[in-house]
Figure 1 (spheres, rainbow, N blue to C red):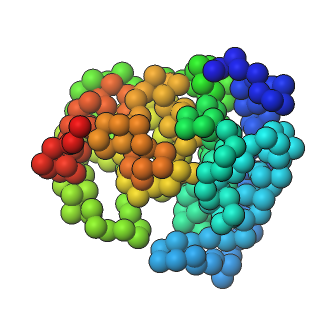
Figure 2 (cartoon, rainbow, N blue to C red; figure 1 turned 120 degrees about the vertical axis):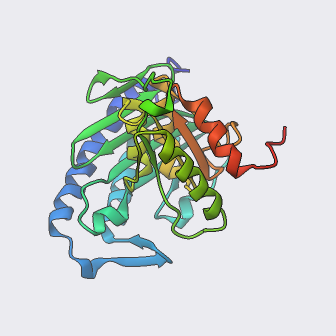
Length: 279
């Protein structure tokens, strides 16, 4: 698949390079707005679900550019309700224009742009750009994973005691929170600790880079994880849902890790599926 020729005449590597140019342009816009943004401009979509004109304008810029670069792609995006479901098209862009919106709105310098391309049910290209550190993580299927042009690899640490993990907290659905707290408590005792960055795309990119040995979270959306998941896989890491299966893009739970993935999965399942995993 890495050498496939798309309808537009580009292969995935060439397409990825064009997406890097798009993220650089959008990053400049977001960084400029971060200096100008005022708390009075915060809007609310739902409980603890914040947004601003920056999210919407960044998304509009990304979509307009992608339509020019790759017109055959349909869209699944965070801010446009017309772009939130799969169509009959083989290619779908999955976009989060500003992952870490709450951080951005409160002036915390951890937020990113996430752009993934799915071919039928498989992500084949992913770009995550962390705005403040100006780091761009990217991968295409079969091509490896990179950060700012340098090849990157997931951690090969095999023991939890040598690991630093990342996670996130739900802000709407708290039904599974008791089990989640048990997982967190267990992993905190076994590792160097847990970090909560506030951007799942950044968490996944850092797993691919080996900065985190693992990341887990539930109640996420496809635009939070699609690009980062592929980058982790191309960096040699493993990505699953909490059952150990492949439903992590749309299944609202994800576990991404280097060599400690099996041990992390076992620890999560102990509390998430106390009566065992079916199948």
